[in-house]
Length: 268
Ligand code: SF4
Image 1 (cartoon, rainbow, N blue to C red):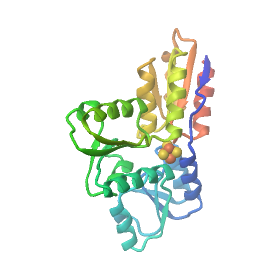
Image 2: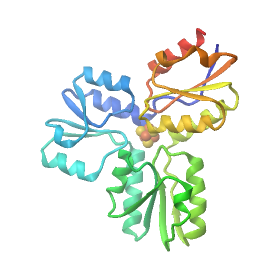
Image 3: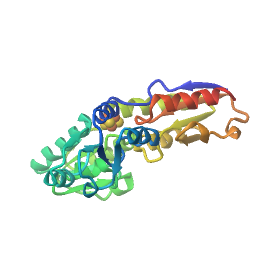
């Protein structure tokens, strides 16, 4: 089986940075998974870095993940006297800062994102009031005299542009900030390019990784797409009658996991 890899895929600089910072610690906790990838979580556990789901569960160093957390969690950790290692990616910090800046200037804040994602909760916690939307449908009824629209860093550019175009028609003073990170955009562009050339796309990454899910979503609009976390999930039947397989991976997928998948497909 012939496999073509997307030009841009796998670990982004923010994830690499977070992992490097975390690996300098011992006996620490990460607030949620540092990287939405089971293999990386396992590696960290072996080094004594465990996942907790709330600040209450931590009693020593607390690592904030690359996509950030809410202000209330930071305050709680400070109050408990925990040592905080904040690996929030500078690109996520930018979204938090822009939301705060424009909220203070009197703009309504509209954020395209998944309400339950820690990044979105973190951005929203920087202002007293923000509206989180996730579809063009929800956008059509919005009316403000002034608003600022931003995006969770891992959203699809196509969706953001569609939403911004609708808002422009209804909001006289609209500030549009495309805060989708370049690593996400490059991975999406490469995946689209590749999906147009192949018989099947395989997207590798954690099932709970937002940017990996977005890659699957985008590719499946073009060609049949399978999302897997690791090589042993591959099913031989997928390759029947197919010659060319496209491979991509989310920004939280380590190279060794991608390589295992590639090698396994090539054996068919
Ligand atoms: S996907 Fe983008 S925003 Fe997220 S950690 Fe990577 S570089 Fe930063």
